[in-house]
Amino acid sequence: MKLGVWAKELRIPFLSLPVIFVPLGIMVALSDGFFNLSYGILTLIGVVSLHASVNVLNDYFDYKSGIDTTTTPTPFSGGSRVLPEKLLTPNAVLIAGVVLLLIGSSIGLYFLNLFNFDIILLGIILISVFSVILYSPVLSKFALGELFVFLNFGPLLFTGIYFIQSGGLINIEAIIVGSIVGLMTTGILYINQFPDTVADKSKGRLHIVARLGKKRAVNLYNYMMGASYVIIIVSVITPFIIGIGIPLTCIIALLTFSLTPKGNFRTASKILGKDYEKIMELIPAMGNTVMTTLQTSILLLIGYIIWWTLSMYFPGTISLVPIASPVA
Image (cartoon, rainbow, N blue to C red; front, top):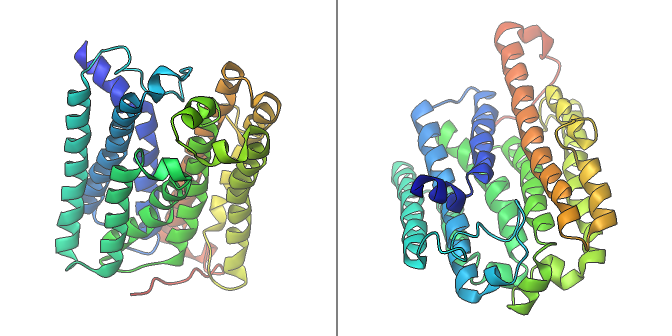
């Protein structure tokens, strides 16, 4: 019984995002010849712990502020409902959030010590940790939550993974891949705010949807998600022009624009544009956004695996496509 409750509190399905993102980041590094399995496992544990921590702490702060009692819950928004339903105590949830934060922070501290507190890695880890602490009480109230979700699940995460895997190098390619999945992850947060907007505004949580109004906010969702596909298209072409970008095989990620049957951007966009005021009708759009993000990340991962395989066993097939080298 308690295990099921804690699984609900941790919002296990959403933790599938870092489980895909970290291997994708590792593959970006592996495509340049860098790979460290133990560092990869530690990174995954740390990232999942921090993601779980922000989920749990967000539930705690929402309960304390009263937001949880005024939202209409859906599978993707309105919190886990564990505290309003009194399945766990607020203290237990707070302690769990802090413990998860300490686990993630400890792993970050280990890597900082390993790399002599390098300023780049220090900045990434500090931003990540303080984002977890400040997301609910500060960032989400001042329309900054979206920006920090983009950074922490996007460029900063992938730059950090590449840095750790490569032994202290950075690469624009990691930033490009991070920007693609970071924008889509922000899209998940963003569309999940539509059902909670009225409740959030009543308690002072003025995120972007609340500030723009739902009708105007629809356009920003389309721009945000659409920008990911623009980046994919541009960055598979630019290696032929300036030697910077992502492998051509990653073009398969464009399938999630409209062709993947389990969820795609076009379906989500249509539903949101029509039903942005209707909470229950928005559930398929929210689900499609999650699936679009997961499937795009998986297809990018497959694209990198194909590229790496070709480079290892059929190097002549990719010799005409230059990719920028990492820099110290």
